[in-house]
Image 1 (cartoon, rainbow, N blue to C red):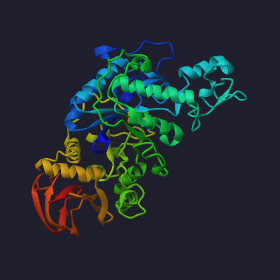
Image 2: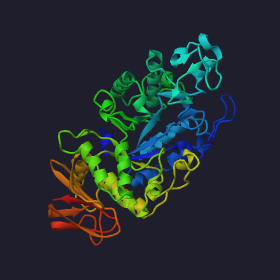
Image 3: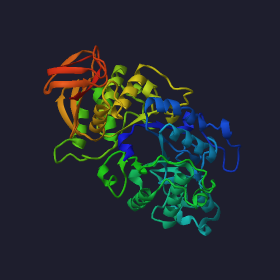
Length: 488
């Protein structure tokens, strides 16, 4: 699975492209410019930067026509009018694929917006609407919006109308949309919004579809999407069609399996990551990582590849949530060294700030005109390269061994202290040690595993990336530093 060896880059297009926060009412207002002036093409403008950074996939949060923030969908078959046209988006995907960057879309299947075409039909026709069973409705009540009927909203948010995923017609419609996105845009996978709320049978059907998707455009492509002529789509890069679920709490094994999703978001380790640095208690993240991936029989997610992240479009950015901004470097060191699929939120790689709830979530989703090249982004670029099999200064064979260890290797804690952590990632032919220092004082680790000859993968102090290092049971690490060492 290509996703297990990739680093994701997450973009929230409505914010990134500077779109208006509220869409025009249904049937009103002019769409955004199309062609060269389409806002969504800004994503394509960043394709050279993404290629330079080494990101293997872009995760785009909702791009389809919606009432406001993207998760209140109006139409799953066309790009949001505030971003441009379907043809514009197809060109964006084509540009990203040209840089070797895959595209994963945020799929909102649990609910739609009040402006969704089928829900508006129910508002108009009530009992006589053929779509009344697409939603969970009671005509014996009323809604907060005085619709003349009650309906279920997602977790009490009645601007988000819950779809009835037990209705075969709804499932067929959604799966048809997915086929349309694949055949019309050439996308490479989906991130499933609120996957913890989705019907399990629906997810089984979706996985069956994902398993059968090919890179070819079938004759019914235009019928699937309704906006494309056959053959107009960008070519896919090939490989599996990945499904990643948004989950918060609970047992991830319930939805990540051979018959359901390939991966899901790792919120447990997201919390442990920043919290360990803020409390100077590295035991927290070490415990979470061992609980999930360790070698004991009771460890719960061994062999799984969860989507790991330091921040995203729903939470305070790493540079803002860390009590000590100097910890951002070692925090990213842990993120890329731990098991899982690293995902970087746009702008955070150069230290952009943003606090959830300061005004609203749009503070977390700004429009950056150009990427920033600084020391932190350079460090993140080196982490992406090491994990992706392109470690500087080492042989191609050694670089590939490092990739296998970091993408597929087992996890083991070696030394855990309040302010420092040393752990191991190992597979059959490679062993990488990750050393992290969370404070402003230098430290010497002592462990039997630190005996022998190692290759410095990131560079630290006087040691350059690719240099051979002889250790005799100890390792010095500078303040707020992280070191990756390959045993030779």
